[in-house]
Length: 141
Image 1 (cartoon, rainbow, N blue to C red):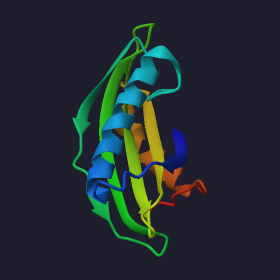
Image 2: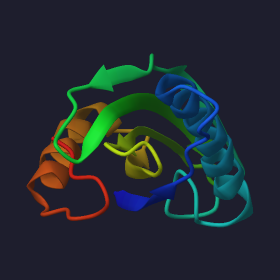
Image 3: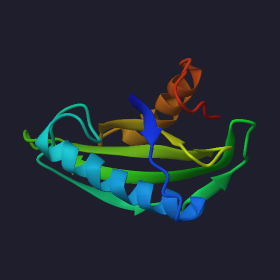
Image 4: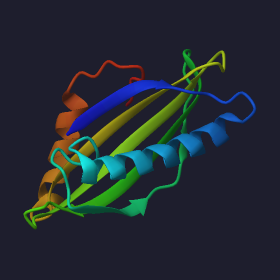
């Protein structure tokens, strides 16, 4: 399981929704590329190959006093480690725009494990990740 967060650029010539779409596309590409070049992407070890198996719709979330808009996308992925073991996982990405519209924030939650037994452990991984205190640029549900 991994967390990530940082600041996100906001293009003032685009809508918040357009910025969210561009941000999600950029990070899906970056995370997949990082998986096969270093253990910095979708899995905690370098993969020989990976692919997205499902890309969910971008969902608007309820705004808060800090963020005028919030967006979430969930993607599922599969991959093969260099030793031939297959993995599965999911990534939940959040993108927000501040109430001033001049800056954004982003966060990731990535859960992955061996394909064998994955369906039995994914709900436990989700629960454990929800119970870990997370304080970053975006606090999510």
